[in-house]
Length: 428
Image (cartoon, rainbow, N blue to C red):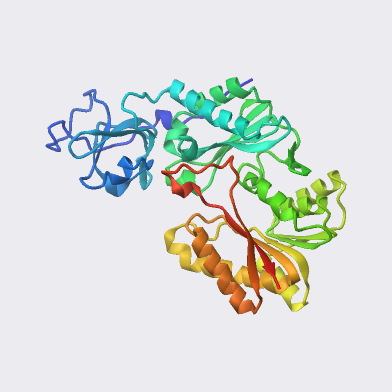
């Protein structure tokens, strides 16, 4: 068993901060003066913290007292000096600090980290998500009071994403606690992407504890057995937020011709085939993902699978021109909206692809459509799809509303965690 901490990790880095004297004069203190680092919130900007929202944006910060490094714990106080929270500092991010505790008596240390992990694991156990051959999201960042940390479990392997300066600071302690609590065969890292860059952190992947998987890890997802190549693919290797929804959609699949657009490794299509679908067509831009889907289909004894590699918008347009029709169409596109500024353009993308999909649904058929863009809420998504329905000239009814599964919980004070929304629609 081995643990790694590469050179240049966040714990050893230091940043320059403006220090303010206790009197509030603003004069720089001597660099050798020992003090508890603090963030002072501008007057009137503490309301979200009193509502226990865990993010502190840079515009709300009046001053930084002391010289905290990236990931260090700082006390957060209001303009009068009253305690508000204890948070992980991130000097490079617009989210300048992420709250670890609102309790002034609670220390942020290895014991707290382990306790939070224990609570997260206990919740998944209560949800029945810890079957030995199953897969689930074990830790969901702020919703599990571990900001910036994602942990996905694939059978006896764990894959971690340390996406904030605070999560990076406690990386070793998190890995050690996960090893003690779950005794996995391996703990692996996929810390990559825009979230890391915004925190001033580089990308990193590799095995942190235990064995490197020499071949794809096998796990059961609902009706089918899947395989994930640890270290490759999107996110932690698979999209675990759609496992429950694949089973829900499969209820409409018996005897159906299925089109799975943005199929990735075919979770919706393969689950539909296992539920009695007549055939399935997968459209996806990733050759590797389609090869994995074909291999998973063969491993589950599923036939009548056709794969189409290419740009999904273009391929759907070709299908519309050919007047192809399917009894069940699934749209599970990647995130189209990454910021509030992209909402208009992203809404256009969602409308266009839903319009194409509606033209491909046979009369009396089903469209299951999703958005994973957090900036597009459920009401806006329904409005977009309704606009596509009007333009298509089809009569459409909502049969079911879908969201993320319970292993992706949403803390009431952190609505940003609710990102996945879906509709199952009857199309006539």
